Image (tube, rainbow, N blue to C red; front, side):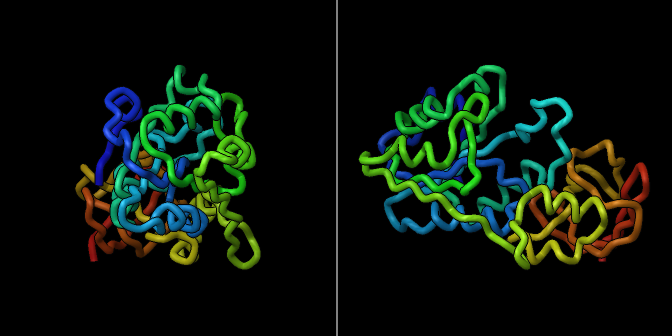
Length: 240
């Protein structure tokens, strides 16, 4: 899988002229709703490159008070997209300059840097300065251009739309058993760089409350089964 920064993508144009199916989003946790969108990008077959535009850090970090924690670290997200067969990931730094772009400007830059064949977004997608561009706006923007725009409807589990906010809540209250039914790769804590424990302050991930859990841990590209003990300030583990 190729990985480019937004700067590399726009300035060096490594995908110039390459027919591409794209999507844009945070994709935190890669839940079943995300998968409905990603399948649209992956379904184009030979000759069409699948490209995911996502963020190096959660955009909520930019808006004071709105960040509730990551479900996946960047390493986990990139690893998951690679495992799904995504060809290219473009990592956007949510900077003061980037946040000024309108949605129309953003998609115009993308269209000038590769050959757009398809765009897939969720029904509630919004982007651009002040969230000025919705999924419907994207459909209007590309109407008559030959670009296939697919707006993917919400994915429900037991009648409830699956969203990252729902998954964060389940983690925060310790209801981890339901997560494999909502997430493509399940929930795991990234312990890369730690030996047998870490402070809660060492990670931006959402962690379960105090208690004991059996779960997988992510360690530098590998998943390992472990028994973890979560305290109020730290999390420790033993591999099974």
